[in-house]
Length: 80
Image (tube, rainbow, N blue to C red; front, side):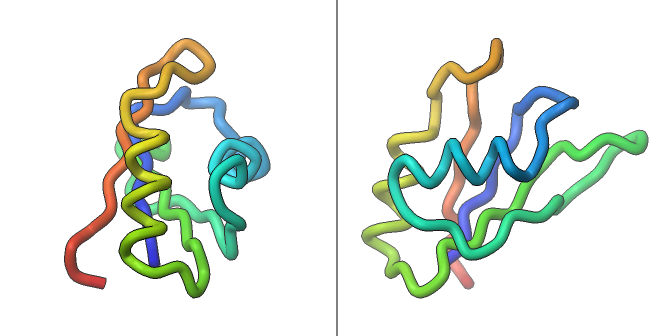
């Protein structure tokens, strides 16, 4: 399953996102998903073999969380 993260600081690194998400579930891969003006505005986080229930749990924990001065926007796409 995949979750998407946005509204993050411009200076965020893959390692930092991995550490943030791994509080709730192991992460298989983190990569930029969308860019605007040369800056990553959305990140794709792969949770490996996690099912929908796990992905929703992680999304609920992260969505709206205050992290490094920003409120995280987390989303689990319906179709994957």
